[in-house]
Image (cartoon, rainbow, N blue to C red; front, side):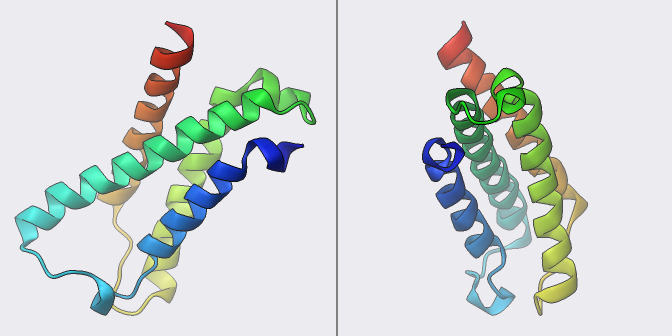
Length: 124
């Protein structure tokens, strides 16, 4: 049942994986300042949606009770580790791409924004 409630999370993670692991020749050319602001915003947005979807999916599933009782903790951990994994993949395996600590920071900020979004919609 965990897959049933986390289908959108898995699909969104696949979208993130495909879009962030494109070779640099597939990316649109923009200036350095535009890339920095847009890139950070894009990372934060993608990971806030991922974390939000994961929290909802983990809270609704009933197969793994520990995940159901602590969905925010596990979603933050899994999403943050996924962001680090992507940056490592970019750095080591994608030609023309490099991992960036600023992207890891933007991913983590996005995860925290996803938690705030969840709390704003479901708790407050």
